[in-house]
Each structure stands twice: as structure tokens, then as C-alpha cells.
Image 1 (cartoon, rainbow, N blue to C red):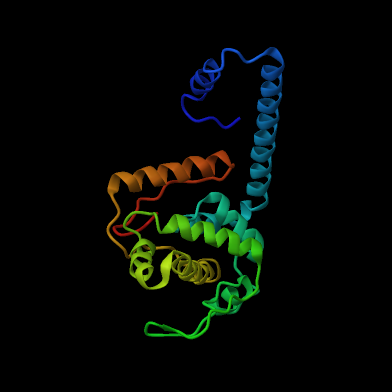
Image 2 (image 1 turned 60 degrees about the vertical axis):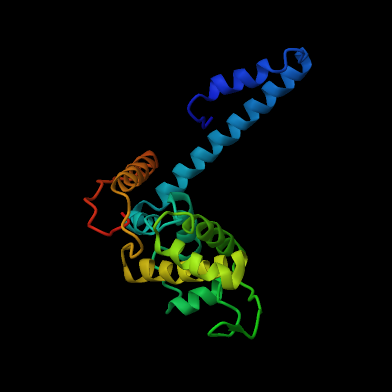
Length: 222
């Protein structure tokens, strides 16, 4: 079971608050915890299988996971959907159209003429929406700055949609052109940057990837 620090103590403390719990209820709770542990073990095994299937494309995973909002899991999901080189799509516009994250509206200055929402790949839209929401919370990132600029005019949902569109186009550049993400927002906090690199390194090694942490260049997000 994936446990946070202090998990056993926290669980024991929670159970101590119910001293009158009868044996049947404790038995049921134990069965649920065992089921949760089994599910998490199966998820961990599947993550290893996915990582093994993408072993030949480690660099694509690492480059994509370096983008604010992305992580190892989301990078692998996207690559599983579009391929390690996004070879089916000749341009970022084609990928955005296929995913369904085109703006869907004609905007000139601050006037919105259309609010059509195009159809597309739901799995990809879900992942990009999650990535966009995480990206705008990444302190000092370009996406956070763009989100803050869009928020007063567009509102949260449409601002996140605009960020997802940018992330989709960036994803194409990283996979198709082999580009590496460089942060053009505020300079990252060195301590936070080192922690992020260390976290990614641990996650990648746990999945069986062979990773040597790079020496990050000034302004780089990796």
C-alpha cells in the first residue's frame, strides 16, 4: 500500500476515536483496507509494465514530464495515446484538433464571437485538463503567468482551456521535434528545482528507467 509518512499512526489515531466499534465493523474495515492494498499493488505492477513498454522511449517521457503540470504518469499516458513522436500529426494544430483542445471560438482582442467546443479524444482532454490545472499552480511558471493574465477576462474554465491548448501544442513540439522545455517565466527557486529533479529521478528509477540527473542550466525547468 502506498502510505504517506506517519500513515500507521494516523490510522491508529483515527480508529482510537471509535472505541465502541464492534468486532464486525472492525472486520469489515480490515477487508476494505486489504482490498485497497491489493488495488494499489496491482496499480504499481501496471505502472512497471507501462514503463517497461516505454523503455525505448525514456527520453521522450523525461522531456515531457519536465513540463510544469506534467508528471511521469501523465507523460506516459499522453505518449501511449499519441505515440512517442506524435508521428501521425504533421503540426501542433492537427494534434490540438484531434484532441479537441482547439480554442473553439474566434477571438479578436477581447471579443469572443463563438463558443463552440469541438469533439475529440476524451482521454487526452482529461489528461491535459489535469495537467493544465497543475501547471497554473506551479509557482513562477509561464503557465501560471498566462493564467493570471487570462483569468479576469475569461474566467477559470476558459483560462484553463487556453492553457490546455498551449500545453497540447507544446507536447507536439517536445515529441515530434525532440524539443526540451525551458522555463521562460520567473526564475525557479533553486531549492524547489533540486527537489523536483530529485523527485523525478526517484520516480523514474522506481519504474526501471536508467536516469542520470542532469546539471540544470539557468532558466531550465529540468
